[in-house]
Image 1: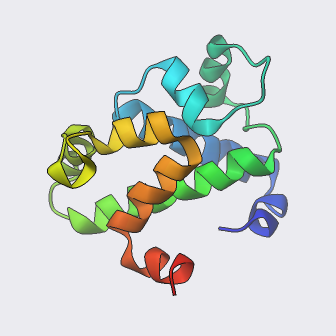
Image 2: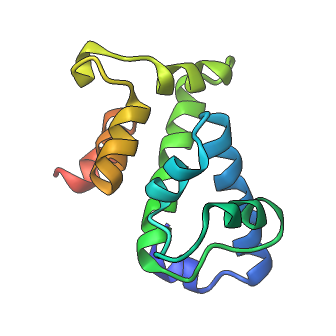
Amino acid sequence: MTDKTFQTMTNEECVMLTRMIMSILDSWGLNGQAQMSILNLPKGIPVRALRRYRENTAFPDDAGVYERVDHIVGIYDALRTTYPHNPPMGVLWMKQSSARFQDQSPLQIIVEGGLQGLVRIRTHLDCTYDWQVNP
C-alpha cells in the first residue's frame, strides 16, 4: 500500500482498515500504550481513544501512521502465508523469543524499535518486500 492508496480510500474503507489493524494488534496481546507507540499516533491522543478506533473512527490522516499500518498489514499477511493451516502459530511466533533476534521476540523488536522494528520484522518474514528495499 502506498500513501496514494490511503489518500484515495473512502472513510468507510479507512474505518474498516482501522478496525482490522486494531484487531491484529489486540491479537498480538499488546497493551494500549504499546499500540499507541507502534502506530505512532499523534501526541495528545489519549490511550482511551483506541476504543473509538476499534468501533467506528478511522486513524488520523497521517502519513507516518499509515506507513506503519502498511508494515503491520505486511507482517500479518506474511504470517498468514507462513502458517496457512494454523493461524495461532503466527501469534505465537510474534511472542516467542528467538536467537535470530538476540533472544528478543518479534513483538519486543517492534515495540522497542518503532518503525525500524516493523521494517526489520517485515523484511525477515517477507522476502518479496526485502527484495524491494534491499535490491
